[in-house]
Image (cartoon, rainbow, N blue to C red; front, top):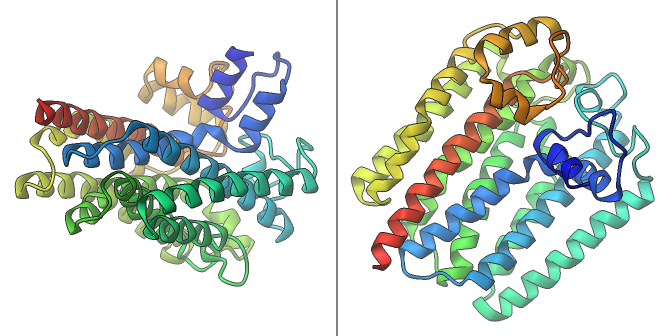
Length: 352
């Protein structure tokens, strides 16, 4: 079963020859394969607080649990409302690259609603406790994140449908998660912390841009006006490239200005991955799974292919029709991890 869980967390899928266990099923339903991005936001907020001499491991664990549960609830809410709105269907990309909770019968609608409610109830309890401990801004961060994530797909705002979904994701995974984590640990949020939350918020937005680029044609046909649909493919690709460069430029600028420790420049170690991703963004998307595999065979290291899908074969690209987002998530994990390493070492050196 542990092997199953590892596969699901890496790929959002379970190998066809393996039996689905209850934990694997819920890891798929909640799309645990993208929780790493939330984990990195919590780590960045925690390390920024540690740099300022304010780190409480117990509080940080509570924040991390709350953020992971909020992310799980957000993913389930997206699937629920997208099915109700007729966006998620059997021929839509969401149902192609991984099992869909409702369309593939993993859970009933009532079961999904119960899971969403359970996640939010635990989150509410954590928020109440931390609010009593740290002050009312904790609840403001929590409510702000909840409303932004729900109205990402829910009426009447339906931010994803109006070209505002990318901005919402930037705000959640950048300022709300990172500055919110910092506040719980430090009791205030200086202006510099809001600015320091920008680079990783941009990185997660890049991952969403990759996902929306992959399904732009399908979204346009269904009237879902994501930013790539609103901008057009060519301009969206250029905008995504600019966000990648902005990630590094802001980090270098903050380091030069003293807003981040010089060890944050360890993030530059991820430049080879960024370069490879930028090249992919400058090329047309493959037309078939076979073509995707051929390109991936030349460009993606063997360990990366195994990380996304250990069952990848020479005539099949299992993540199809995803392409740009695969590269984007790979880069975000590398760049975010190196930023955390730099902040962690900086905090250790400062402490001693």
